[in-house]
Amino acid sequence: MCGIVGYLGKKEALPLVIDGLKYLEYRGYDSAGVAVHSGKKIEIVKAVGKINDLEQKLEQASGKGTCAIGHTRWATHGKPCLKNSHPHQNTDGNIVLVHNGIIENYGGLKIKLEEEGVVFKSETDTEVLVQLIGRYYDGDLAKAVIAALREVTGTYAIAVLAKDRPNEIVIAKKSAPLCIGIGKGENFFGSDAIAFIKHTNKVVYLKDGEVAVLTPKTVLIKNLQGKKVSYKVNNLSLDPSSIEKGEYPHFMLKEIYEQPRAIQDTLDGRISPQNDEVILTELDKYQEYLLGINKILIVACGTSWHAGLVAEYILEKHARIPVEVDYAAEFRYRFPVLDEKTLVLTISQSGETADTIAAIGEAQALGAKVLSIVNVPASTIARDSDMVIYTYAGREIGVASTKAFTTQLIVLSLFAVYLGRLHHSLDDAAASAILQNLKRVPNEIAKVFNEAKNIKKIAKAFHKHSNALYLGRGVGFPIALEGALKLKEISYIHAEGYPAAEMKHGPIALIDENMPTVVLAFKGRRYEKILGNIMEVKARKGKLIVIASESNDGIKRIADWVIHIPDASESISAILAVVPLQLLAYYIAVEKGCSVDQPRNLAKSVTVE
Ligand code: M6R
Image (cartoon, rainbow, N blue to C red; front, side, top):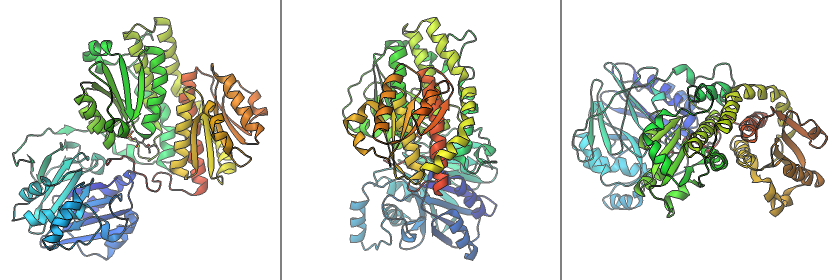
């Protein structure tokens, strides 16, 4: 999604803004641009492609100044091209704006403005907003921004410059992330604090409907009625080195290898010394509520939705409470049946996914309480939810989610035991067995890395295929979905995940000697059944890549390729099995020369509907 950065202070602004934009590259973008205020005029430079392309163009530009804004664009309205990239300016050229979000009523506003004689230069919804602000501007930029925002519907994080106000930037937000970094004699802002964390850790998270007037030394926040509002300055602890690739060629590989550490951090302090209780102090206040629930509705998107599907199996098994899992975008627009006895559980790495945020509002309006599992501290989802359990994966930069997913599975497993104990559906011995197994996961994942060489060879053999099937049963089914998603998003190979038993109801027609099938066949009560599915693929000459438990040596006689994971219980095997699937997708994408960390068309966090 689009990224916004800005600086105003005493330093040369453009290098800081460009550096900030580089930190936002992970969000996904197709063009980039900056505007710098030189005191007398505003110079705009834009480029289609990467920040490097923008930097090359800047070498030819003359603009210098201590106040600048920058933007990375992920196209929604209008194709990726120079005229549609940001910053945009109004016809008079005195107002310049960058925007993340969608102005939903732009069509009607555009017609109205055209009737008044405005000639539009781009195909974007954003240009309507800059023209509108220009219409209202009479020397008071915040007033003009507020007047324009009161006319628009939709979502926005914006930053606005006026030609005759060289030391001022006005920013505003609604349903798109935006935060301010307060420095000494200088202020920053960004879609993500990562953009300026090297310079200050004093962060103000702008709330929906707030407009901030920034100068180098001051921050004034108003609401859309023009009234001053107070704000809280947070001391953010984000280690800038956690956002570097280090020795790894890609963030995705680094993040795959960080999983033992991320899982350990997520488990630390959450299991009692006797291994029989889960400690989630963040839920203490809500114990009575959680004791009274009779339904859990899990809502999420993408990989986080897959984590929700895994949770359906383990929550129903351990807590004996009915669970439903829904895509956030579907949930928010249907008429869900829920009440104050329903726990709505949302899962999100970024905490900024637009549909999940909206789903929280819907659920709360219907009387449910919302518990969210989130990776990014103080993100919108964390702030909007009644209860939050954090995963401690650390920053995830690669677009393909890896360590966030496995840490979500860990938190969900802990939560299943916690609820099972609370609802008396899990006895001491059963809880203790699950918790001791969970504690072994970091070490067991480290052992899976021994398979990396083998997986690289498989990637070499399979990277030229254009389709793949992923099959699993039970908790293996959502893992199959996740493996298929990883492959398609970074290698652009079409892949589908299925519950293995469903194969006979259609997908089996696809199987021939050109169709690779990845089967999750770890030990458990469904093993014999999945072996049957493997034989069905083999009988039709399909190519078989099987993820099997270490002690299953015999599978080598059947499968073309075997990837072993340590022997473990079914639900732990599911966590271990996702790691080779992440590596398989990664090495196939590398073989194909794909842009692993920033796959085409994708954004790390989907902040628009
Ligand atoms: O930040 P979230 O967990 O809410 O994001 C949800 C999805 O957008 C995300 O998982 C997406 O599917 C990833 N690209 C998957 O790798």
